[in-house]
Amino acid sequence: MPHQTNSSADSHPSPASLASSKGALYHMIAAMAIFGSVGFAAGRTGLQSFELVFVRCICAVPILGTGWLLSGQFRREAWPVREVLLVLLSGLCLVGNWVFLFRAFEAMPVTVAVSVYYLAPVFVLLLGSLLFRERLKVSSAVSVAVCAAGTALVSGIGSGAPGEVLSGGLLWALLAALLYALVTLLGKGIRRMSPYALAMLQTAVGVLLLPPLVHFAAFGGLGSSQSLWIALIGAVHTGLVYYLFFGSLRHLPARTISLLAFLDPGIAMLLDMLITGFRPGLLQIVGIVLLFGGMTVPLWDRKDRAAQPSALTE
Image (cartoon, rainbow, N blue to C red; front, side, top):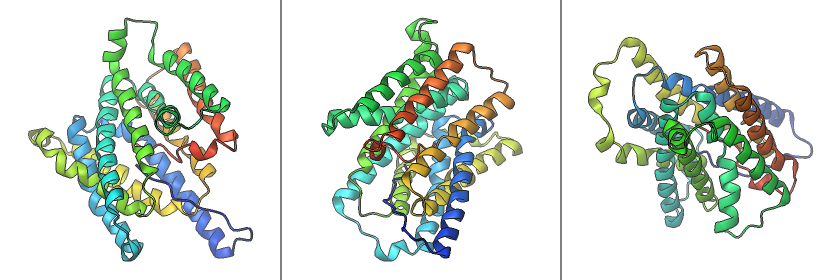
């Protein structure tokens, strides 16, 4: 999970800083657009969730490590024991998050899975109020209520038996969102480690823990096209995108990152409708509008902006 570092804009930015911010903006836009296509790419690999997540992790570690070295952050890296333990725990949650998200992609249309997955910021607000006794502000309560209604409409709750709805992928998407919320909350206690080192350790957890669960024989019968999509998932959708994301964080304000994060589900839904042919029903469209409308509510409340995750990555 990308953990945002604090950034503040200078009152009189220099031409160099303006150019840096402009380049960072383009990099962040590219990162979010590529993130949005991961569900589409996953469906063309011929692999199941554990295999796909293992590919992502094993590709991410060397690419993030390279970014860590090239950025020079390794020279001033801090390794507090408490933070390292938090990173390893958050890495376990991140790996689980990816596994459940890909399971959701297997069981339901990408549009529906992504919409439910984007409940993660709502879970952050709810869990934050429970675990840290943070008072749930009016805007946050409104956001939770609107998003809950949107989820019910998008997932088809009410149109079928609860067991049918959950077996259709809703449970996997909800678990993915819940685990991402835990990653975000654990990240609150990680202040000294650099983003590159953080993500490198998180994905290293997957490299170490997933092999017993991976069906390696599945890689043997793949065609050239499927192998290409697998390479894209690992190198582009994970390694390159995280490299772009972390390289851009320090140059962009939190609100810009939060707004750009909506490119991710937007691209996912567009690809789902244009290429795979998914057509949401009227109630699902209303649900999608409610979901993303509800999630923007805290963005307009100055007191709540700090509680919003900067971006929800896949």
